Length: 96
Image 1: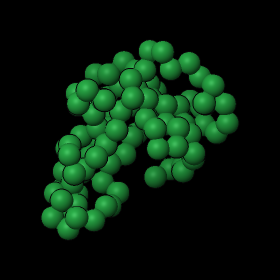
Image 2: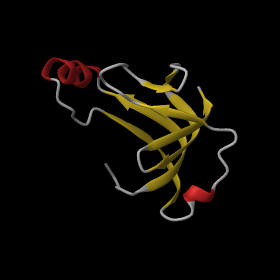
Image 3: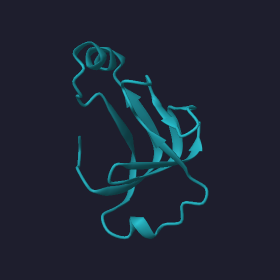
């Protein structure tokens, strides 16, 4: 972790999940940090909530249900051109 902020906009994003960590969570039924997003920070802090999200899809990570980040329709997300993190919400654009 380089920085912890309430909101961030990233470009060239990779969504990383430790599969060993996911299996451990499922065995122990206890949450741990096993997934994160890495990318080039463009913006952080105030003002992100005002960005238009029309070309973005909402994504999430739930280690009890999935082995990767997924969109709301269940499609895996491993990379994206852009990601906006607002609190616990993840929005992605240009999914690859």
